[in-house]
Length: 264
Image 1 (cartoon, rainbow, N blue to C red):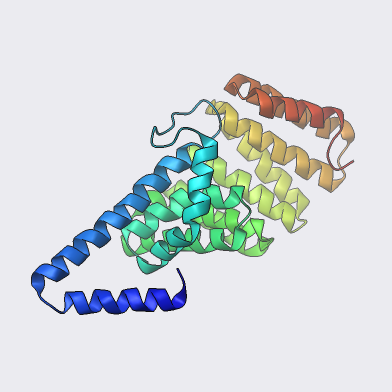
Image 2 (cartoon, rainbow, N blue to C red; image 1 turned 60 degrees about the horizontal axis):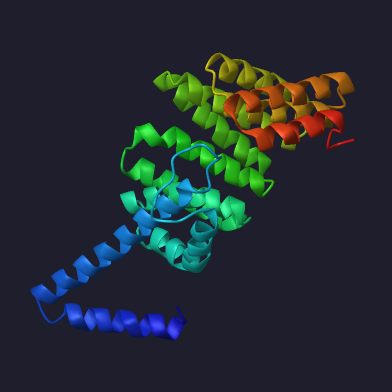
């Protein structure tokens, strides 16, 4: 919305609300309907950006339509998240928008919405989602190569998962710690974290996450100058895990990387 049009709309809203209680109620009801629409559709569109095999919302016919809706509404969604900071709306949109913003490489916007989601968790005392919010923020910071901040965020997430006894969450946090440590060229720490992640995810039989973690470990090994056979073995493990998850496209990519590692 153009700045002048926004100012005019705000003036009209204030004028309407000043006319009486009924007008204020209608305004608040309209605003609630709008924000509910954004949250519901953002969450629905996000389901179409998950890996294949997971359930998707019928509000969109497929990934192409979901992305088109996100593209058209991005500025409004960001504005809604900002306007409703420290509320459930900011939390819901912060989680629902992250994957889309990563997809379109809007990394600064991704950091912003992830930070809003974390702040909302803290304001609402939502301990259940707080560790996930820290992990999400760390990943967004990593996309901007702010690796030291990302590492701090992932370590905080790991601590929260350990306190709650969430073993799967700990495995995901270890994988992210490995990626952040690699960005800081702290390869020994990155390899140790990656090995913890693949062991825990394999034991948990989360094959899709295990495939991703083996790929991260292979990338770290390659960057650290490890023996080619060790790098190849990690990529083969990644392919095997993805195959068990039924993610054939990801498995094919890992197999190709085993034959010709990206860093070589």
